[in-house]
Amino acid sequence: MPIANADVAAVFNEIADLLELQGASIFRIRAYRNAARMLGDLGRSIQAMVEHGEDLDALPGIGADLAAKIVGIVNTGSCPLLNQLRAQGPPGVVELLRIPGIGPRRARTLQLALGIRTLEDMQRAISDGRLGTVRGFGPKTQQRIRESIAAHQQADRRFRLPMAMQVAEARLASLAAEPGVLQAQAAGSLRRRRDTVGDIDLVVAAGPGSSVTRRFAAAADVATVLAKGATRAGVVLANGMQVDLRAVPPESFGAALLYFTGSKSHNIALRQRARNAGLKLNEYGVFREDRRIAGDTEASVYRALGLPFIEPELREDRGEIEAALANGLPALVTLDDLRGDLHAHTRDSDGLDTLAAMARAARARGWQYMAVTDHSSRLALAHGLDAGRLAQQIDRIDALNARHDGFVVLKGVEVDILKDGSLDLPEDVLRRLELVVGAVHSAFDLPRDRQTDRLLRAMDHPCFSILAHPTGRLIGERPPCEIDLQRVIRKARERGCFLELNAQPMRLDLNDIACRMAREEGVRISIASDAHSTLDFDHLRYGIGQARRGWLEPGDVLNTRSLDALRPLLAATMDRVSHDTPSPAV
Ligand code: DGT
Ligand code: CA
Ligand code: CA
Image 1 (cartoon, helix red, strand yellow):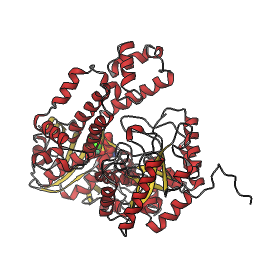
Image 2 (tube, protein in one colour; image 1 turned 90 degrees about the vertical axis):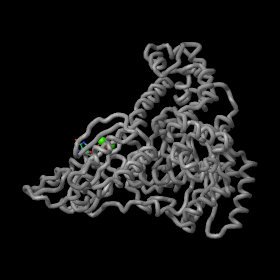
Image 3 (spheres, protein in one colour; image 1 turned 120 degrees about the vertical axis):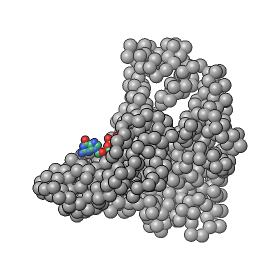
Image 4 (cartoon, protein in one colour; image 1 turned 45 degrees about the horizontal axis):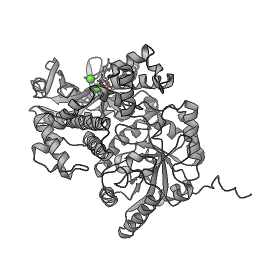
C-alpha cells in the first residue's frame, strides 16, 4: 500500500487535534503539528526513506519517538496512539477544530449546547438559525464559518503544489524509463505553477506501437481507471489524485505539450491567432492546408504563429500575447536570482533548528544573507520573543557574524500587528534590528475598512520594513482577509517599505495577481521562505512560481539584491522619524 507524506501528516495532525481537545501540553501538540508540516512539505517520499532504512531522526523535529511512529504508520497504515485517542475523545468534534476561530473550548460548547459534532451539523445550525443563539456567534462569525467550510470542501478537490509535484515527478521518472518513450513532461496547471492543482497532466513522446498508456493505467497504486486507449489514459491514484496521460508522436510533442499546458484561454487566443493567419493549430501541430509546418517543440509552434516563446507561468491570457507581440515580455525571476532570504525562524521561537544550523544551511545555498525573524511574544503558542530574549538573540547573531565571512545573518523579527495596528514590541527594541517584518496572526475577520486601516497604521510605524503574508490566507483552510490591497500597495510605495510573497506552499501570499499589482506600482517584493527548519528553504521554488505568474523580474524582487544594495534599502525603512517625537522644524 503506498503511503503518501500527506497521509502520515494527516495522522499527526489528527493526533495534535485530539491532544488539544484533551488539553495536553502545548509542547507535545506542537511536536506533532511541526512534524506534520515538515512531512507535508518534504520534497521526498517518507515511505521510500523508511523502505531504504534511512535515519528519520535526521529530519528536523523528528526524534526517536516520532521516527518510530512514522515507521509504524508506513508499515501498517495505522497508528495505535491515534486509535487510542479517538476512542477516548468526543467523536467528530475534531472536524470542527479545522475551522479558523474554533478552538477546543468553543467546539465543546457547541457540542453541549447544540449537539454540533460535524461540519454538516454546523452548516445546518447556521441555516436554521440555531447557531445565532449561542454567544459569540454573530452574523459575521457565521458568514466566516460558512466560507471556511466551503473552502474545505473545495480543498478536497484541489491539491497543493508539494504533493502534486511529488506525484508528478515520481510518475515522470517511471514513464521516462518505459521502452519507446522519448520525452516525458508535466503540463497543465502544475506546469503553469498555479497555487493549487486539480489534476496532473502528463505528456509523453512515444514511438509507434508503444504501450505506455496501457502500462501507466496498470500501475500498482492506481485505484480507478477513468480512460484507457492507445494515446491516452486517465487514472485516479490511491492517494486521491487524478492523473491524465497523453502519448503523441515526437513530431507533435511540442504542440501537445503546449495544448495540455493551457491555460484553456491562452490556447483559445493562440488558435484565434492561427486562424487569422490562415493556419490551423491543434495538439498535433500547426498546419497550413494539410501540411504540418511546426509541432516538435513549443518554440516551433510559437514561431509559426509569429511569436517568441512564452513561459508557461504567463499563459493565462492576461496580456502575455499582446506583450509578446510588442516585444515586451518580462524576463522572469528565477530561483538562481535570489541572494538571500528575509524571513526565517529558529528554535528561539517556533522553528525546529538552531540559529547556527539555519545560517549554515542558508550559506550552503550560495546566498549572501539570511534574516532571522522569530516571532514576538504575543504569539505565545510559537514561544515568541520578548524584548529580553530578543536582545540575547541579537548578541548571538553578532557573535555568529563575527565568525563567518562572506555570509551575514541579518537581525530581524516577525512582530505581531495587533488588532489596532500597533506593533507587539516597543520602538526602542525594534530600532536595534536591521529589519522588522510585520504580520497579522489574529483578528482575521475585521471588516474591510478596519482591516485595511490596521495594516496601513502598522506600515506607518517608523520601523516597519516588510509586510509578511499580507492577506493571511491558508489555501484550503482560511480565506484571505478582507483588505483593500490597492491601498496597502500604495502605502508601501509611499513609505518605501516592502511586501512579502510568502513561499510556504499553503500560503503563497501575495498571490500572482497581487504581485503583478505591486510590480505595476513599483513596490518591491520579498520572496520569503518563512522557513521553520533548514529544509523549508525549498519552499522558495513555490514562491518563485507564483512570482513568475505575477510577471516579476529580478529587479522587482527585494532579495535579488546583493547585501550591499539591500542594506541601504532596509536601513531606509528603519530610519524614519518616530511619531512619538516631534519632527524637527524645516
Ligand atoms: P486544473 O487541472 O483544474 O488545475 O487546471 P488545468 O489547466 O490543468 O486544466 P485541465 O487539467 O482540465 O486541462 C489541462 C489543459 O488542457 C488545459 O490547461 C488546457 C487544455 N484543455 C483542456 N480542455 C480544453 C478545451 O476544451 N479547450 C482547449 N483549448 N484546451 C483545453
Ligand atoms: Ca490539470
Ligand atoms: Ca486534466
